[in-house]
Length: 251
Image 1: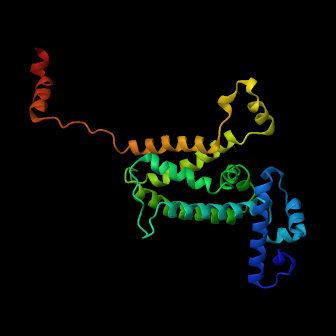
Image 2: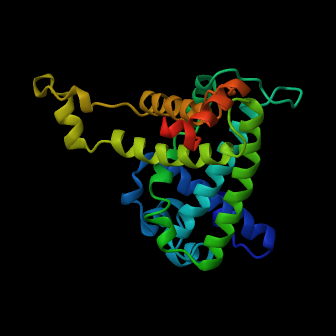
Image 3: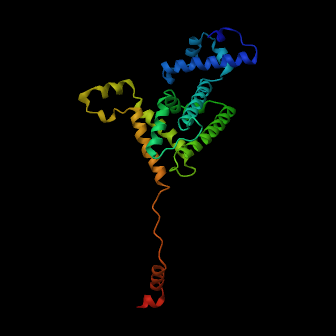
């Protein structure tokens, strides 16, 4: 944190201070729910004036959008690496379940990403500038495009163009699964009581997400492998045509 104590004058010093703020906020996020985090709490942790923080990030949402982008960048890179061999070739997967399990495992390696995704659309993007939103969406488009191509190469069963669809639906599944499993303290107490007989609601994020992803990838792959109708023989076509003639109908 020495970077934060020194006055930032040059552009390099400002970039270092900005990164130090992000690192401090990320560490605080690992300890504190997003809803309880404020600029004042972060400033106190970093020993900085609130005004100094606002020089780098105009809002709390702007700050955590930057953190979200960094976390997404790490996750996308990690996922692509997990689906690529040491020689730089795509990993050859043969079943939808293999790909689904790779996706679930990648999120397990980035535990702060699911809770950040749950606040992206309904919180963070509600209080950022036009330029910030535009830059973030362009960043996402680039990462999604690169990663979708790797998914398609790794699992040939995945229909063309469905790599992007899979990533977007994974995003939605992650948000929904996290919200269902990140229970409030009062709910955890209820579910922990064996007398409540409510064990059906005691869900765990990782297995629930993995099962949902298996179903999702199976469904996407199934669409490209629907059984083709058998070709109709010429004799059968002739018989069908004869039945449609006026003479055939009069008889």
